[in-house]
Length: 409
Image (cartoon, rainbow, N blue to C red; front, side, top):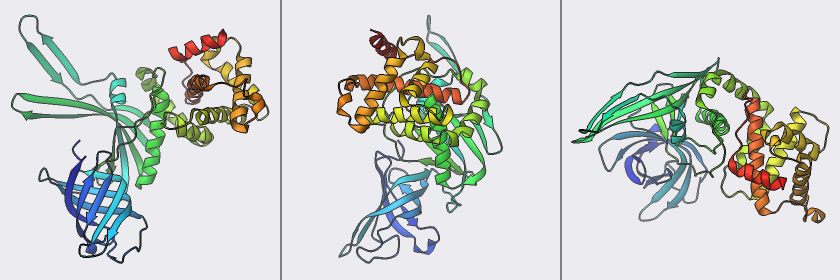
């Protein structure tokens, strides 16, 4: 919480226009949205209502009001949100995509990065490896020994483009007298052999996070995202992402993932083009709040239909495609009449997609669509797992098992 809901003072400028540095105030709100307020224009143009276009990048050095510490900040995709000309000229600029470094970056003009680091509580809880070794004896007297040794890097994947590994970052300190701490966070580090601009590196981040969604079977974003420049300065993404909906299912065991990680990442990178339509559409609704359940249902059915058409058999109709993929899923041993259920899914799709009133009575109702969406998420996730080389049967979540029992009645 070092940066949020705080004011900073500093100097800002547009790259290539260092001679036009302006003194400004920066406010970072609780969501990580950064707003620059100044009595001068960043564009060095104070004509009212002129040039409200987006600025690709603004750089700055800032000091916090709370303590005398210098930070470096990069504000990407920054928009002018206010300007007033009069006795007191005022300009405001807002960025939803900012990076901050807790050091004075002498190479702040560099826009190339070659490392991205991702962490979250979900990652920390999933990985059993730790450097802590606790010993205690409190039966007779309170005695605790806390030993810590930083674990070695865990290699996950390496090819000509990427090196991906687990890094155990440790911090320690004495907050005050009689109060010390050791904190361990696990980061998934992705190093690239070629340096990238931020937009390209963001695509790499999304690719890795989508894979973790499939491994965890939980809608997932990293809560800590950091980028390292080619000059080894670490910047943290300020923006806090919206919380995702919860989901069902068991994670793939870390040991299984680690033992097969080279093949898993290799398959996932290779399948990005082949599975692009399925991946993009799935993650456009999976775990996203505010998506109508009917739209989510139509998206999942479309994913299954197109996957079968593009990867199994170009010929066929919707019901046959759905039946084939349901039979390949581990739910097939729990569902008595797959043919009937595939037909119901087809009817429901036709009703909500084409508004065919004659199918209304036979289509799934609202509560049933919610259950069907959970089942379809499970089936699609299994398809992705098979595509990356994990063929073990998935454990069916209890809520889906209850739904299957209702379908069998």
